[in-house]
Image (cartoon, rainbow, N blue to C red; front, side, top):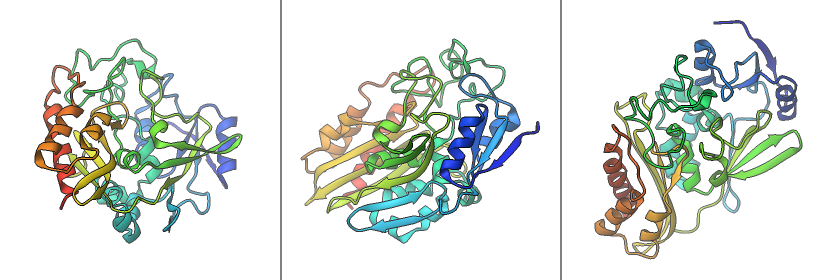
Length: 330
């Protein structure tokens, strides 16, 4: 692996300054995703070659779980996934998030992988991660998945680039109406996770709204309304150490078996966590039955545009939504 310069940040402001000064710099924390990019020397306009690593693990007080019954949950961006998964506060108040935090990779990786890293990891597309493929995300003019191997690619929202978002935590946070706290050169700002992730239609080179010198510092999750339940389900090819073929996060306020309000968010099917408002419209105000849950799943896929090898994802997504919705009735 080639040599790199290394900088230990002492504060979020210091890290932002370092990123601003060094154009070809990258942030490192757990390093689960970044080190693979550096080792494989992947680069292009959407993935510049890192020359300086800015370490944010050296910033104090970046790993924490704080909960207040009135204001909700605050998670430091460097909190590892195992800590979130095993937190009694998260399990009791946000069970869907606890399940999502326990879903990625293996226990050893969840022990070091951070919440921020899971949310900001780059797509797993083998064309993006293969040096011989000058795809859109690396500044090229073609998506090789269109004519190539595409069994794991997008069935919704695909345009130009058919990657799927790899994060398990992201659908859960969108379902819970969470907000990202972000450090910028002009101070702190808040971005709802509804707006945090962007697809290729907006900017094919990026997956989030963050600029190069902006940093996710904290995730804020509001206190759920009374009667709210949440869950997270994931289908993978292998039982461990695998990314979602399809995942779903559901959070809903349930009263006497009726879906008052809630969100249904799919992972593994689109370039961003896909909120299925079509499914939500079916469920809202309805007594939840197998028939209603199945119809929600069916409606969620009406706009699906499978590629040559991934139509199987449509059935999985429909059934996973039905299963997740019905699990809230238990």
